[in-house]
Image 1 (cartoon, helix red, strand yellow):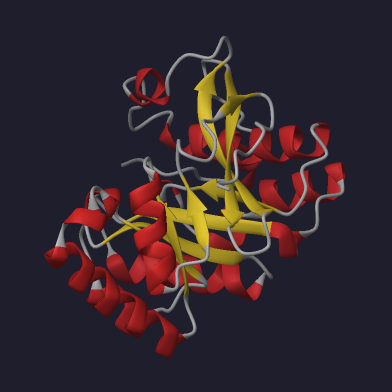
Image 2 (cartoon, helix red, strand yellow):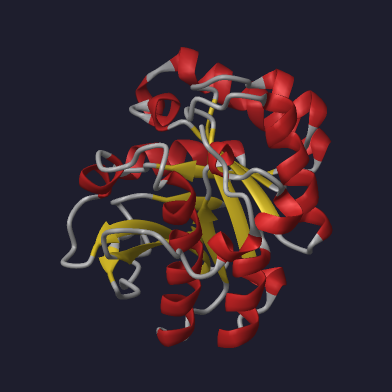
Length: 248
């Protein structure tokens, strides 16, 4: 992959040849019945799916796309007066030097007056990361800046326990395939309970992502999970903060 040669490429997604916007899905604390964070999900300017945008990525626009997603997410968070935190997905393969590539994010946060302590940087474990050491260096650099960090789809991808051995994020999201029908599946219950026990000892909070049924939510609550995200609670809102449907 060709990499930018100077910091000018960091500015507000310069070089991206198609427009983007954002949808937001709540991550809720089921015990306090409050929104813990909103995940920023990239969309086209007219609401087109993330997949349709990802299909347009190549070695020349991956970096400006990653930068534009960060800036656009923060701009919409400020515009919508977002409570709590914002979780922004990033692409490790688009970051050539963390301390330099974070500059546009820092400038955007300052411009829209969004505190760094309310920003979570989230990376999916399913992304084909070229260099795990590079990823852990990025996560460490972001933590030094005051950001929270999260691993999405934990248990589904490239690193799993090896990644946790080298870096312990603030949050992990259980892979939704582990959650699906967990209330009816003793094997999935054993695997998730073991993961939760490990995370408690490492001081990592766990998010149950992709929760679609009351049974799934209750099973995870019984295991001690407090943070949830999924269609049962709220679908993503395009350029809006959707209302959460808390269970009775």
